[in-house]
Length: 158
Image (cartoon, rainbow, N blue to C red):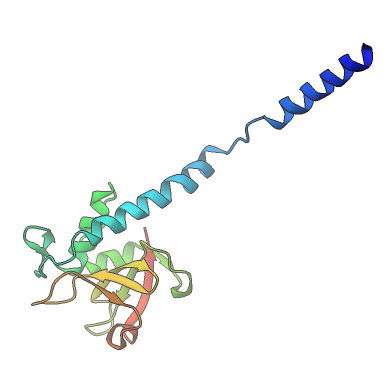
């Protein structure tokens, strides 16, 4: 009887130890669970703008977008305020090496001299979404496109 009681207590102790929840620090939980959905939402909002007309100074789906307006609008949809112009976005970004790009990062291109004159949102898998230029629409392009590949100068993250 004593042997049976000891065995039962031992099994109860093992079961209770193995079912203890694994605690995650709050910061770790928010980083692992919140960043991914936020980036997915950011990319979804940007993708929804495909086909919107390019408009210099544009920052809305109704009126059209320029490159930095598309980026600012997309970030605003997830509650993140970022600067309006490409130059301001470039200056305020957290620099990221081109080798460690993640979906949601910004890509900066030299199209007008020394400072970046164009910005796009990295979608992953070698693709970006951007508002290219007058007469065109918001579209997805490949990073290895010869025109864009030779002009890519920096990346950033918010």
